[in-house]
Length: 123
Image (cartoon, rainbow, N blue to C red; front, side, top):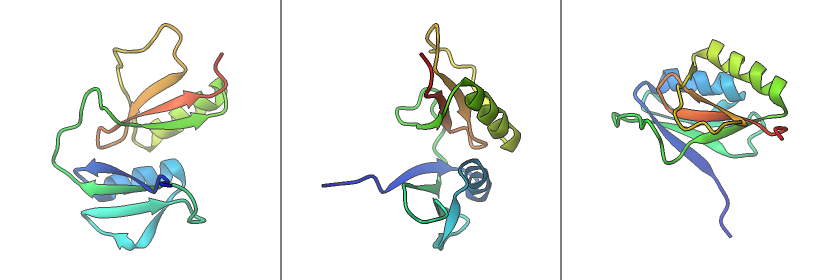
């Protein structure tokens, strides 16, 4: 049986991306896998899905086929987390595919990688 091990994202500036995602998720670099072109971030206790950032010059996709969903407890938590992430360097994305009553907010990390903050208590 397989299990999810690591999510890998491209970045033009790996240290900048690592700083953002470390602060966003509370993750820490895995010591043996840290550099200017590659870093693996893990939960502080080590257990859980890792996030790897690798040097890439591939353009960011406007509508990516794969993205991260980050869960918030409710609408208030979602609003607070979106504000916190924006203060860390994320940007709101003018998303043209929002439904009428969305439970998610689309953001981009400092590298332009899209991700969503989901209100898990929504309707």
